[in-house]
Length: 289
Image 1: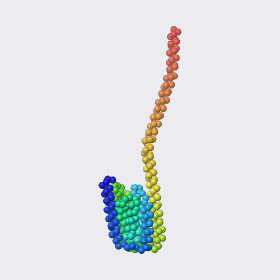
Image 2 (image 1 turned 60 degrees about the horizontal axis):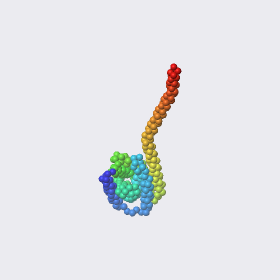
Image 3 (image 1 turned 120 degrees about the vertical axis):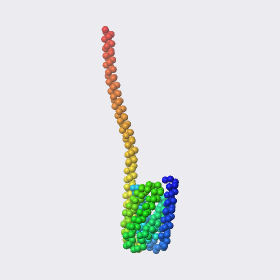
Image 4 (image 1 turned 180 degrees about the vertical axis):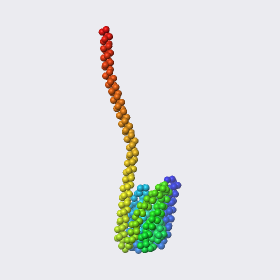
């Protein structure tokens, strides 16, 4: 990536992140400090989000994905979009700082928080009853995934990826994350702030599913790496095999020539005494005569 492209990419991260943080703060301008019970419930949600972020795994295209969107949208329905968007933004910003530089952390937290707050307002999630939100959660999750990974594809293209490659990588991430959206509806359905045990059990199941996906993805990645190493070894061993075959062929030809030469020398050695005997007999006859 050239210097100009790198600067453009960094500027995109910073500007998009700042716009996202500003929009999120404006959407949460009426937020008040919730009661202690709601804060404890929010801590449970954030714990599941942090666990899901820690279980990030690679996909075949080379991208990494964390199956946390389902818990984002479930928290927006249960705790309200204002509190949830701010919590999600901070968790993702910390994770972005852990994996990359400050501009990426600013971008990752700002974009995710703003999109969650914006789409929650569009669909009215958090403003109605739980029964209504159960059916809106999958729609909110789908809209969030498409918009979030669409911006992510643009960010990767500016970062040096080919546009088709970036679209393919992020389409795989959308499909992977969409598999857990039904579980988000189940979380909303059983949610009761004064009885956190059912949510804790379902949240643990959510993390176990994430762990299963991570293990399968890691095994598949190791298998692809092993196959690539074997193919490389095969390509490098082919010239050596042909060279060895040529050397064996040359050695066989040399041995054949050696055997033929030895046979001719032996034949010449047997003929030479006979010729000497003939000459001696002729010489003797001439002397007697």
